[in-house]
Length: 227
Image (cartoon, rainbow, N blue to C red; front, side):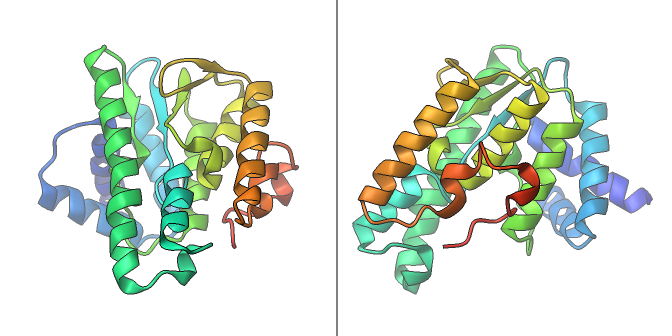
């Protein structure tokens, strides 16, 4: 139990913005990822509750998906990630995942410079975890911790993971704002998601349950979007 609490604390500190060494951060993430996801999540929630500041802001961002993902696929002449070759996957990692994470890091750092406590999930990576495990983890983090606000980074309307987090925030009564600090009501979010998914469908993409993430009963929503 001491080990899980230790590594969860290090992972939580990374999300909060503490400057840990790469070796310590990587080892903590690898160790936490090897544990059962519910155990790892409970320990992470506990550590965040102890260490995050008052009125903390949760920074939700697309990582593997979002607007950049669909734009990249279109540029490559593909309709899903499964159609990409190895060279295209390398480019995808650089042009989608890295750019999404760098943007979230800048947003979180900007909030901290303004004196806010910003919790940045995209700052960590748990090797071997599936999207289902990640989404389950982050939804519990949002549901269990007293965030004062959720900030969603650009491209959130086309990210299933972001939409599950936004859904959790709305259901819990946590205010949601966009990357530019403009408030987003549930009605606003529904309109933006409807517009985005309609445009994606017109471009030939299969959006599946993306359009229902904010409206379907939570118990009927899968924790991972398949194409």
